[in-house]
Image (cartoon, rainbow over all chains, first blue to last red):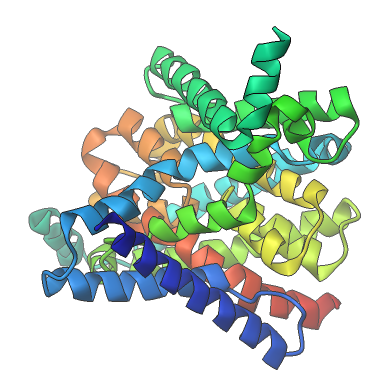
Length: 128
Length: 252
């Protein structure tokens, strides 16, 4: 059933968010610390296990994939309901924040890629 | 006309589905018109930000286009609950073993890039007067991707203004990657699968890396996407937790 997929995902999200709140409480910060990330990690592990055991029906998967497909449309709706006008005063900041990591990233490709041994990169090519 | 207006007001969420669907459709076509050099999804988010601007100007409110009653459903559709649910769904079917294929350099790239984004967000954020650790972490999240920013901001309780900035930053990053990758691929050394995996981990924006690599060499797309798919999840995990706590310890 489609709802099984949603229930699985919802369960992961509730546990993840609860864990995030708990971590926040434990370190004395009134905020959700990494809850969505924890939920994603849970879903990765649990869904993989269920799929390997063949316990996740196509319909249940479909329930999850529907939300996967809704991801960008929801982000569009989110972007459209932000207080962008107030942010406009620091509009240059958005450009700096977006461009600086890209510039740094391009500079770091060579040094980091140099870390991979020659045979390893050849192996990647074979496996895929 | 008034009948139609009241009719649409009765189903705000459904009305939002229809309008967002339209935006996606138009953006998809505009994306194709650029030869997919700029991904339709990035254009759609820019559309969203423009709408938020128009809404803010028109109503003087704080919720962008959602303050126009006809579009109030946008706030529900794009609210934190649905958004986080949709983000969690993207983790489905991801294989952690895949990360091994990306190798150590690809994995290091992921962590280095997230740390760099937080540092960039904190440094430039503070320079523009956003000196609270919550704002700095949210802006750092935006420097990671347009998802990590709002997720961090909502989790830590940042203002909509800062969240809007983080989304805008993430979109700038995504589009910059799409445009710059084909131009800089050769000099930056994105010529092998291993380098593409590193590139995906460093840039992190899935749509940006996919579109950028497709315009460079389609054969490299899966390698870049491989690491990039882990980026948003890792960012959502690390930025509001470790990232925020480090910033709080340093500047709180």
